[in-house]
Length: 362
Image 1 (cartoon, one colour):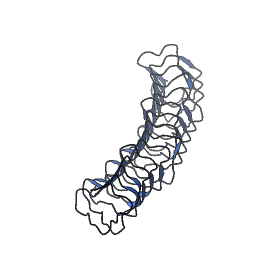
Image 2 (cartoon, helix red, strand yellow; image 1 turned 135 degrees about the vertical axis):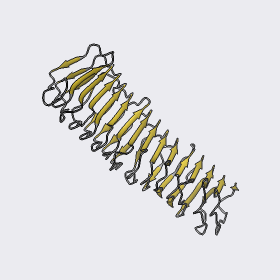
Image 3 (cartoon, one colour; image 1 turned 120 degrees about the vertical axis):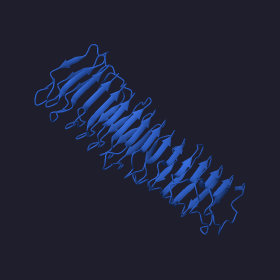
């Protein structure tokens, strides 16, 4: 534990292997970096490097790894201009965690891959000067979570989110003016959720590969001004490609590919008046609903191709006053349209094609 040192500290040749935790720096004023001759790998279930109220400290080219999915590689609290670069944090439950109040943080080329069942990166309340590039979460159960991230800020596509398991690849909670573009967060075996939004504002999610995920995109809380465009949530996922809750009528939902999933799109509490654009691909949804709408008023579903292969439901409506379902191709569905529950007053159902090989009522 080193407190209130300045940049003249020489720190070399120290061995932390086998300890529960490693190095704690409190109030260090830099520019400063520990010497490369220190040994940190093999630290146990605590924190390998803890920086508290430091400024201009660089942790570079260290092996902070574990072989048993324990502990946190680096923990930051109230730091200024910290650089975490070229670090091996493989096998750690968490590679980097911040508690908030940090500014000027760079996290670059940190390898947090492994199999641990915790967030690989957990970043809280950071300003838009955060640099987060070339980091790996491959194989972990949870990827990166950003709480209260301030924008404008873009998540860089050089980060590796492939192979994330049963948890969530990316979570944004309470952030605003954030862009998630052109990321590969796909899965090969119906696992986990690609992107999870919780109470965000003006977030753009565009051009991402979320195919094969159990759920491609899920949102909770109240989300305003969202753009969800051109994402691939197709494939063998057994659940809904997207579950979107409590978005306002400014939601832009365009050109997303749901084809081949067990279920397609589920809207809950969608603000209206709002129309689902026809540029979304919702064909060949297999056993579930192509579109489900719950507790949403004045929604229009018009001109969609939602045909199937004899099973599933084209459009399921529950508690949606003023909804309009018109001019849709719902052929070869077990049910073309189904209204359930109550509260579906003033609905319009017009000129839909529910013909074909469905085994139940159109």
